[in-house]
Amino acid sequence: MLSIDSLLAMAGVTMKSTGKVLIGTMFWVGLVTTLLFLQLKKPHILIIHPFDPNDADAKLVDQGVKKFLDEKHSPVDVQWHYLNLQSYRSPSSVGVVYSNLRKVLDQYDPDVVVAVDDQSNIAAANVIRAYPNVRLLYASLDATPDHYGYRKTSKISGIIEVLPMQAVADLLQQTYGGKPLRIGLLGTSAYTSTAEIEQVKQFPWYPHQLVRTQIVSTSSELRNCVREFNETVDVLLVIHYEGLGNATKKAAENNEETIREIEQNFTGFPIGLQVSYVANGGSFAIGPSRPAYGYLAMKMGLDWLNMRSGSDVPTPSKAAHYDVALREVPLKKRKLPIPSIYFEAARAGSM
Image (tube, rainbow, N blue to C red; front, top):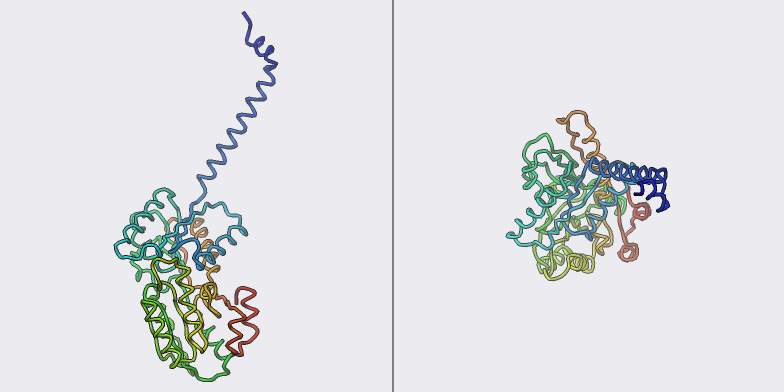
């Protein structure tokens, strides 16, 4: 009867080589196990956007998130969830949005949730109360957290959005040389919050005057409104343009049509208060820096996780960063003496 050593020798395998194979196998098993363990130990951060991945604002915020991750090489796992609200327009579909969010929270089990923009925070406020261990960071809110239904808790902080009204006033001063101007404010009912309107109304515009605010719900209302603005104001601030148009079309198509209506039929100076206004066809925008929100939210989230006490909370902040965006050809057709610094800022991406 042959011994085990004899059988291995006949197969061309020695005990020594067998040991090497076993050691090698154990090494790789250990390495894979360690990597899996480290992956599981990484803090999980879930970023919630209100619309789909093609939304211009979401892309800009994500630029800031990815910039932070590239610079800091932080041991963190990040996942995105898009509420796709453009596909759930009826009040009866709200339950579906909330249910989808709960599923993601259950499956991903995040340590920190970053809810971007008002719409995401309305959804998060309704769902997050069932997850008491999750830290919630709001990003780009236009009002205080209680306005969105957040209950008082030690696990909520974030970044309040500040519309760059002073930057707009400086632009008007440099472009029109101190001439008193009539200003109009235009928004859409589905997207414009009372807090945003109040930021514009409360700003000391003198020597200019905010003479009219109009929030529209349909494309026909928009057309009539733009005609009226054309006769009554010199500068039109477009706070939101989303949510109008044909429900059978993609949101991007509707947004482009809405902005085209404004740009072609308002002969004064239309200014978008969101940088995405230009991405969707507008000629000029000066708005909160979306990449800055993404970057700051990631920094705040990781700082929070690194705090020694579980009851410590980062101090809420206000983001004063703003970006300039423009399209040179249509803007120059308006023959406005806009200083070159704004063209340079648009090329650089921020001010």
